Length: 274
Image: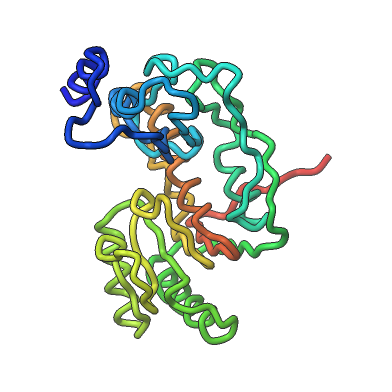
């Protein structure tokens, strides 16, 4: 309804939003997480004026089901689009580790033709630290992760406020907040975090971490996501869900700027070199 209202006003030669001055430009970040109609509304507000609409997005970081091509939204970028291939957030080791999670999955990057998952991205920041441990027992995981956070704080000088602990669900986040509290580690839920500086470990879901970044990130039970196939789940539905969940995991891993800690329930498969 909002889109159609704005379109009618523009067709009648009126300012799309009657009580607002003419809008010079609309800038959209994370466009892959909008709906098609949402982008059509923003396009209608500014119209087709030169340099009126700037959109930035990454289909490989889409965390919601669905998706659309720009052509479906009536936005033509032929000859007016640029692929950004330099990563300024993650140090190289973290970027390479996270990229391996989605390397085999093609994705739609707002165009009709799918893109290959293993794309070339240049890490602007060299180095980085990725620590991967195998912890099958929940008690061992809780003890080891808390000890790791304390060590990172005391020995490596990382502020608690620059750390995050990311999990798939709010229920798991609540459990980990209680674990941290029992270990004497300050924590704050991302549900309550408003951007105000606070010296507490940020604890929340992969979804909630979207758009944030931290010096150090912990992702426990990393190999339990994507979740196992559900009973009677069709092949196509499982493949689509698993691909989406790998993208969500990729988003969580790439919240880390300098260092990343992950735990696995099972040892990674051995690689045989001929």
